[in-house]
Length: 201
Ligand SMILES: [Zn+2]
Ligand SMILES: [Zn+2]
Ligand SMILES: [Zn+2]
Ligand SMILES: [Zn+2]
Ligand SMILES: [Zn+2]
Image 1: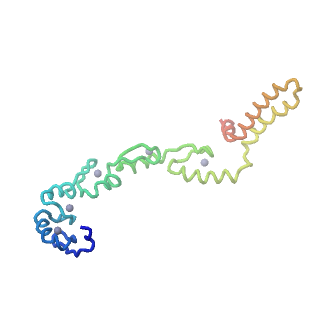
Image 2: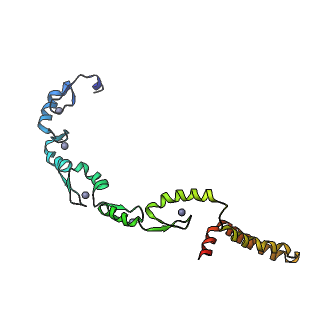
Image 3: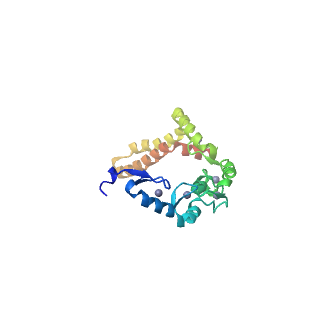
């Protein structure tokens, strides 16, 4: 058997496989008796399993979700990508629902508004991604001219001036107050827009 590769082969007319010429007669008998070619996929199937093979591989199947009948080969794709009853999630609220209802749901869901955390305006959910990109750009260009930042700076700097006038005996208190003032000052510099919002309200 070590010389299999060197042996001459003959193609079996029944299964189309290359069979060592020395074995072809024996093979042909067994092949014709035991195997048959599947009319659908062309595979050689043991005759006693031919019905099984057809049922398992080629018989139409019914989608358990939508009851549509189809060739088994496409069932997985159908359930994963095409079945109208497959479960998908809304891109806006991530609620799971049948695909057939998605368009109608998203039509309504995408029209809901949410406050943009950059400009505090209400924006439709379907537009919010786009909006946030543009909104960022506006914020960068307009930085420094915001009216909202001025009251915040005043609040932060007023206590600091007082601290400098404290006598040295109050150093500890000064440090404590300075710390507090720094926290307040930093807070109002970091969150000028929130300060602006509370002014509006
Ligand atoms: Zn054969
Ligand atoms: Zn087949
Ligand atoms: Zn289906
Ligand atoms: Zn939704
Ligand atoms: Zn915005």
